[in-house]
Picture 1 (spheres, helix red, strand yellow):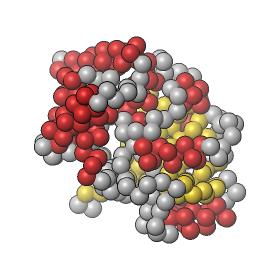
Picture 2: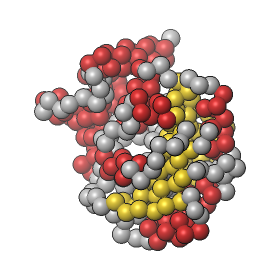
Picture 3: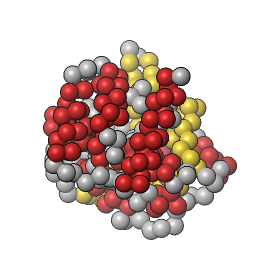
Picture 4: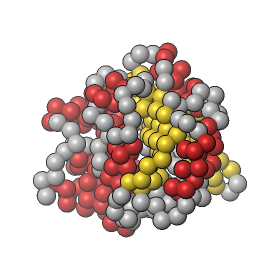
Length: 282
């Protein structure tokens, strides 16, 4: 089973070489790697080109986009630019951030999961961030969730869920649709990935309402949104974000924003979310 990687990158000259070094030294190399420079103003593209010249499986392309860094839409539009450069001859497609250091057996282990169980649709490791000279788990989400920084999809799954949504919430709806179509989502705690830049470090202030909009677009409804918003705000140690998230939800609802999912999928998602909440209370 082979795999392709797409790396959207925006002003990552400080970190991208570390990421690429950890990829070209993997025990199993990707068949293709596309680095998409998303309108960077630093030396990101020069570094990407240097690796593309040295390694035949690597290519670097430029994507023109708005400078404003909102979560979701910008990165997935860049990802889709990379996807358009690739053929269909892959078993697994990977969306990877450009500020990671991967263990050298990362993709060998991921591919082994896919080979071992034909029902696995997505797989990933865990992100660790540096705090007080120690690498600690970046615990913004539950351990059964694959972080958006390192998503790997079986081709059949990726196509069935309709690829990735160009909006915040893309890295939640993908897993929920996986479950809707009866695919398994697997996380491997042995795969500890160094995340060199904390999630959301460069987000514009306008992004604070986007999380609530995303919860609405996932078909959560108000009460699941309220619980999810409170949980996330407390995890980020910024309780007042709860208000912004709720405002974002009502803003999306009142404007009649279209959902990411069908009514049938939204019903499944709400049922699944309530089930997970009840399990944590018991």
